[in-house]
Image (cartoon, rainbow, N blue to C red):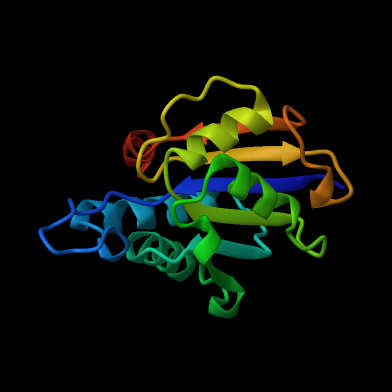
Length: 168
């Protein structure tokens, strides 16, 4: 049975203010709308997410929560992971390979440059810089997340917020 990984860069966030920690940056009103648009897209193109793994940064948590609200997704299946905040590509890759095999379909909400690098590493596709609220959908024909490796993922789709706005 295939496994699906949804790599989502957090939605648009406010610029860092003086004396503000990067971790505490919040979504802009545009970012909030982007998150809802992604959730609406996932309703129209049904997914059966088993879990949402999110960075602990405020902007990633807000993105995850808005998508979950839109999908009416069980909040108990959202897991906030410190490892996904400022994760290196290696850390992010290790995180994916350690996912529970009980999960067939997982969304990771995190940050660039890791999202872009990991998406390209897993698919060998040229995706470029994943934009805020950009969603990369990857399919794996594997039995265990431990089998995830370079190039063994198939890029199903890269969705950008501008594309979603055209269809809503």
